[in-house]
Image (cartoon, rainbow, N blue to C red):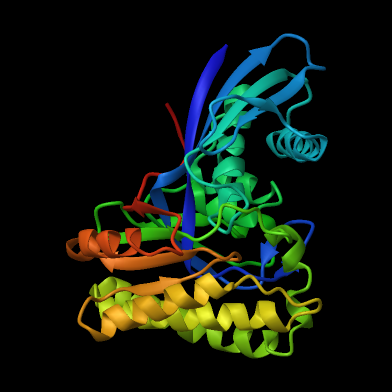
Length: 330
């Protein structure tokens, strides 16, 4: 049997950083995100009779050939396979071969782990011929170790609930892909893989002196952003998202050891976005755990932003996104 799966990366408007339980990947706070139409992982899965066969080849972004996954990459896949077997109540082993490709740079702060592990969650339930609703599938994706993978399971605009127990910490769609014509323009400033993964970075979140104050203000931030989203008030929505991104990175920069993802290019890009906004072209930035920028605008302004940033020397590539469906079998 062979089957193919496609799953999007997502951009968090309200970030997930810090865990109340690292073994179950239970987040310290709710988060809110949008799935990205042109940033996705595609998998082709071949099911094989020999259960000892567990292999993966990867085609890196902008390359033509597949290469064997590293030992560390395979360890993560096999570990998730074991978790999935337990979660699904499966005792029989199955073998598989995976061909993975990305439409965007991986490990560069554009949520490649979310797109990959959400795709693998759907792959494993298909492999074992199980049927889970999206709520339970999002729980399984979360247990991969990449918590934000759960947000790539439902469609469109997604809310991930923080909870003290595993089954209550799930992601659900709060609006479909056509709810609001928001564009996410990824301004790729570097193709380099970041030196510290988000998985490792989470462990230090609570060492920041600002972590507790962030947790106290997160409910207000979520309420403010959700209201602006429901009202389709783009100015309120954008201003709140920018403030949240800066707040989020203040935790990264002050945890032990500190994480400085912003580069000189990141600062230059932020300044350009603010300059354009002051001149009447409305757009707002957010930044995940990486150097690259997500520029949010309404659909009517996308072309002007794209044209402008394609001319900037510090921007290597521009990837435009609308809201997208979650993980799906092709």
